[in-house]
Length: 292
Image (cartoon, rainbow, N blue to C red; front, side, top):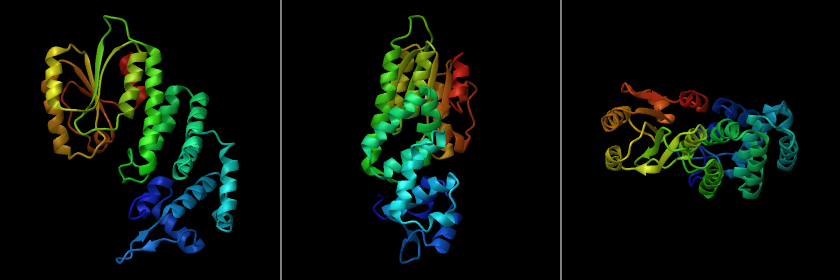
């Protein structure tokens, strides 16, 4: 868990339950027992988080909080396990992943991942479940290092699945248009970039994949040494709006003739002014339309 404990905002992000509701449940049903700092700020531990995640799953599936609040932890956990095994919607799978992450159940997590990939198409599984899971944890864990023991394992597991699917596609035919995929310097969260590169390769494009944290100087060298038709990048890490716009201007100077696709949390949040040859990508459905 986080060294200092979880804030009530962390609990809201992870469970999907509003802070106001958490406070009411805490006061009315004594569901959680947070410690308090010298300034009277609530701090929750791992057991509080696990309990809330379980209760969240139950209440979302019709169980009354007044009833659940009377159960002990074993009764709650047993009911969650029975319920989870019978629920198969996108949100249900996300809740099950969250439960397994908090329990540090890596075997169960991988088993559930394989179940999801067999139940849904590869694209639907990633966009509607796995990426939503990352968002729940806070835009690739940006609310803090909430799961330090699991972060690298889970990311690596997802990455392996993506690369395996990309490898199955093989190389595109010569003469097809080329898309350059990369992340700006200090951007390390490449799951969405890999996924979009998978879509491009599946649509028959040549993919020139540079990956994480590419210095701008390298882009300038590539722009003169390699012919590309499109550029695709993403902005996840926090960046001031003016710095983001300045970067986009530099990127246009580097690739003035190519269409540049951009995506990511910072693009949605900051809504930057875009150079004429730039296009934001909202989701994989939209990108597939661009690919034709």
